[in-house]
Image (cartoon, rainbow, N blue to C red):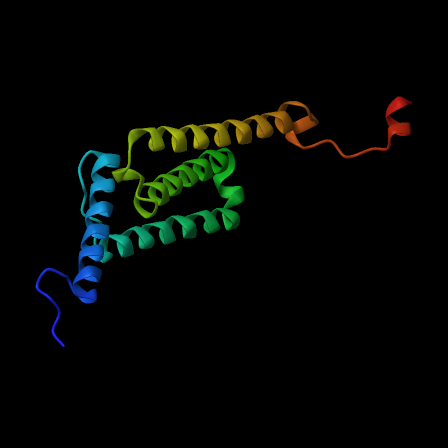
Length: 144
């Protein structure tokens, strides 16, 4: 039996719903970022992954070169940490394409993390003898 001309078929209804969902997703992207954006290519993601792997290799190498690096060890590790954070947040979390408020939130988070880390390092450096953490002692030994 053929359907009347005024009623859409079930397949046509599903196609209309799918088109509406796609349009809604596109319009959401435009309202969030101001304009839609093209996602990076697979080649870009592989390139970023390779750069991250190289930086991770350099971080692992610092373990074996700890004595040679001396006082630049901690600053080098912190710089590598910040670069990796920026690349992961910017590319893999698509922060580059989102609103600036998200960028500010992530930047404030990394600034806070570095500040806490540096504060902890300073506490161990300044509140111990010769830059080494003081050994733990029993309370009775400290009062004598």
